[in-house]
Every structure is written in C-alpha cells, then in structure tokens.
Image (cartoon, rainbow, N blue to C red; front, side):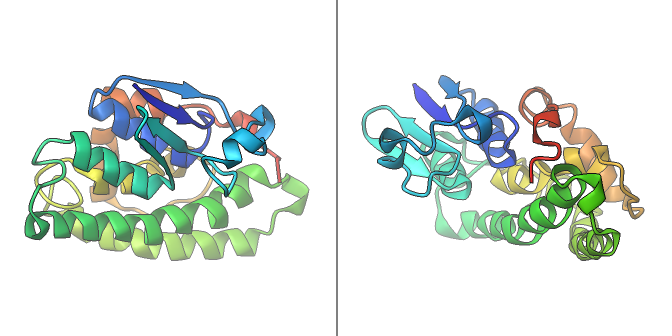
Length: 214
C-alpha cells in the first residue's frame, strides 16, 4: 500500500496520483499542505524536511519526496517496459523528455502563470508580467508542438512519465482565462489525455481553494 501525503489541488500531487493510477497501484492519499496543515509537524518533517508535498511511503522500506523522483521510482518499480524501459539506452530518451518537461513546462507554467492569474488577487496582478510568462511558456510549447506533430506521445509511440510531467499542467493552461496561441498538435494531444480515466480523476479537478491565496 502506497501512502501519499498531499492535497488534491497541488499540481505536483496530481502528477504523482496520475502516475499511481495509470499503474493501478493500491494507495491512500492523505491531505497535507496549505490549510490542511500537517507539513509543519515534527512527524512530517522527519520524512520530508522541506515541508512540501507530495511525499510517499511505499510499505516500510521506501519514503520519498520530490515529485520527479517519486514518478521515476514508481515507473522503475512498477511500470511496464514500454512505460519505463529496463535498459539505460531505451530509457534515456524518455528520461530526457521527462526532465525537459519538468524544467521547461511545469516550472515555467506554475509560478509565472498559474500563481499570477489564479493565486494572486486581481488588484495585485501585473498583466505585463503574466503576458511575459505566457510568451515564454508558449515558446517551449512550440517545441512540444513540433514533437507531437510526428509522435503520438512526447517521448515516442508510448505513454510514459514524460507525458505525466508535460501533460499534468495542460488542464489548467486550457481552463484558465488567458489568451492562448494556436498549437493544434498540443491541443489534440491534450484532448487525448482528457480521455484517460486517471487524468480525469486526478488532474481535471477544481482549483478554487487556491484562488487569491498569495
């Protein structure tokens, strides 16, 4: 049984929960972070000194924080060969696009755009700063646009952790009240993701509890 600590509205928690459900792993999620508390307790800090979410405990032997590390662990421990190959050479391109997505998509979206538009009160928002964030983000999406024009998934023909790191921010990107560039391959890819039950359950969730919290 995997225990995951973290609130449903956390995008990093969503990515890990999506992975857990794609792999059909027995699990229990426990709310933590934001107004749920827990993360500043001595007990929680003993398993995650950063006081962040998510953190997982897999049985008695494995405790991990940092969503990217957790996803890689789950993929390696429980994923099928086409999700996370056993050989270094076969796995490297997937790892490459997974890392690229974390650094150039997730991090370029969450704080520069989502936090500015949703979590910052309207009277404190800076439209120029938001537009700058969108421009930078969509420049990176242009790389994915070219890739997805010739591949069904980001790293190739199969669904992999790269799609989790890339795709988990797309729901909010397409749901938020911002002007978006025309990226037909990315939008078609996003539409395919929305048909996955695990994506519907763990990514396409309300984020109202985050509004005006900064």
